[in-house]
Length: 471
Image 1 (tube, helix red, strand yellow):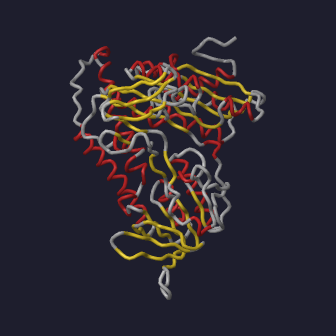
Image 2: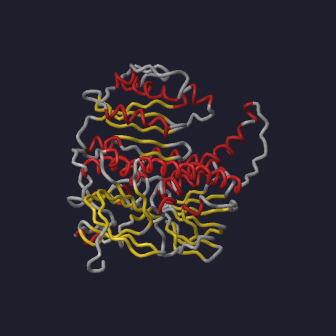
Image 3: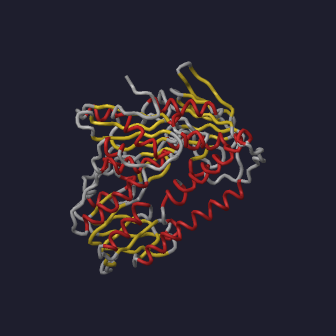
């Protein structure tokens, strides 16, 4: 800053316009703060990765793939199967309209809350100051009373597979394809790789998934990962586990397995091995804050990294999920505005739009056991659900994890059709400290997938209705 130059005075500064950033800005404005939001892409970046190149576009692709694939079973239900030709350009136009609508909606909300939006790269220069730099103009210096850092994350790349946007793609590139490749190898069997692999396979692409761990979806129960793997193979996906990519020569992808070196001829290689937090080059040294070895900023329940700066979203420990960022956003805005608030991840749900869908919340059985609970599980198979049968999608189950001593629900795991929509009810039950009796006694409409929740509770109470009583 030039000597004598006065920085702009800002009451509360938000850096990043993704799900964490814009929700933090709106919450702070509701609490009476005067808010400035800075995003590297300005208004066009509002909604962040989630709205523009992540959650929303990927679910649009998954929905397209499911619609196309469902047609293959129409004939058995009395409807001759129509053409399954796919116009990816038309899809991209439709998807773009959805994204634009949501981005504009966020912009309108911020405008209505009198949040000022600025474009540029932000970097701290002092504990209460920073600079916003943009290529087409002079830098702007800011002095803030409070700041919420929500800079998000970006895809991880592999040195052995240099990203070129043509043959070697990341997840963002895949969502912008104007034509489908004949074949694709997906590097990474986590939720992003599995979701993309499922969608592409349903769209007719010959897919291979290569994962270094012994199973796909290594963060979920092995039984669930095995169920998803079985379904992927039924879709024609080649699943290679305990495999490590060693390079690519432009037509052949090279890797090693427990059996030795191997190679695969594919048209496209998609790298989906995780994300990197955006914590470099933002002046954290000015705050005397150092990221941990993963590049994340360690925070307490109040999300503060200094007395007047909070960090939320993908740059903090925990899963990189949009709904985690929004929950943290409320906490950070409240704490910096003088209110008492903490982030409680107890009911932070994880959802995977695989086939079958996977959703979890609360404690897993293993986690509950490690914490000393007397654990029981109560499981209802979707093969016994009438609604699942009419959906022609009865693979999966609903399971409660219970403290057997008192009957309190500790966690839930749902695998199957609409699992991602149902897990919210389970999260609410856990947050409210519900017992199995509470869930079993709540009348659910018939025939619906939601009935599986009380059905599983009845199993845990040794009063099952639609499956034999366990011995």
